[in-house]
Image 1 (cartoon, rainbow over the protein chains, first blue to last red):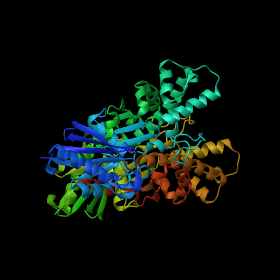
Image 2 (cartoon, helix red, strand yellow):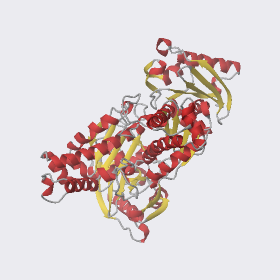
Image 3 (tube, rainbow over the protein chains, first blue to last red):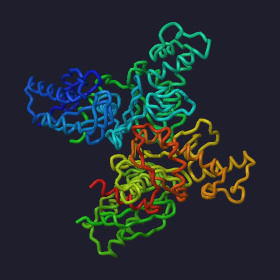
Length: 313
Length: 313
């Protein structure tokens, strides 16, 4: 009986691994370092070895394991082929075939943001939904889209890369991607800090933000204390993100939008700034959407990776 | 052997029916009137009767038919449930179950724009693609999105309703949907006419457009004659549509964008105005996209409807 499944979340410095039962219960999690040297060629053998050791330790036979799911930062298509993952040193190859060859187990792979969305759908705040958008507000803005219970990967695995949709013609500073006016420039932690610094420089208004380091965290801490300038920053953040999510909802018609990433630690107040803008511009036919905060935190990746395997059973 | 399939495209005045072999060859097509009276309750019985008559006429047994696919103007989810189709008088019910009950054959149903996209993917200009966006530029702007070979329906069948994504904060005139700044206000035949009339009123520049009726057709006819004012209209049309499609491509990562609908009769020149704007704002990871004109015309709906059935086999 296939009663277990492994979920693997490959990051730039650490690989997180999770051992689950097929009901979605996390039985154990652990980490190993990500060895990115030599074009990252040690990463998958390290993962395979760690999983094999765990199976021996727990006396689990191959027949008991449904498979191994893996998420990684890069474009990965629905067949488990990665198309260059710069942070890991990887070129283009089939993760699915390589890891499956090492382990003799079924393997599925997906982009980390898509996989995190799948995790929140399975066991997090998106539970019960089959059509959701997850937006991850961290250093950048990541996105994962689930439609009909499956991750939207697109032709080369760039589906759901919503951080780089164009939301402003007025912006003149370039985004990391080379374009200007990307959502990430307004809605990421870096973007919020940028907006706050711009506002501080352009105004002589008193603000809590003048007292120390400016970050997405200090901005939303100040918002909670009704700091006028911080509230202007939050308003601008909310407008770009709310309008952007409304466009995406118009395209994919979800019932749930999950807000995750470091910035989401600010809490429900984020949604108070995003939702009014969303409601104002969204197409009514796609407008009945619930906003929730992610609940799985850094474990979303291992949950979603495990779910990838169960998805195809 | 299941060698045949029927495709049905329900419009506000006419129902188009197509009889295909499972290889995608259209063997015969015909039309019946759409009887929208009495909340449209006669539409599906009329369709069933017409199909039964055709099967008798051609001496085809039920065992030879893979099923019947149906597209209709309204939100229809992946289970074949329609959620109010105003033009047909329909409320909320299962098209799939009702028509299948009448015919004793497998039935699938989908939104007409999604179904047309599926048709272009199967036998039209999107042939070979499994990830495409079709945008239909008619009186309004319709859209169908195919991801992994299947139509993106969303939670209540509003997936791909890209005519109402918000593309302008500056617009003050309302769209038919009640919002302002929708893509449809700039990229539909009606929208192009509106832009042209605005430009004609705001400028005293000489233009071919001052000589007769202003329409999307006369605008692009004038563009082909290098009429300055018409070219300004085309430029604005191309900017909104190109930027809008770039956002959608950022979300779904397609390899093909199919331009259809009445406006697409203007030809390749449309793409000349859309693509430069698309290329400028699209995320590079999603940017390798081929633009093509639709080739199935009014038959896209019956092709796609037929394909809906084969999709699930």
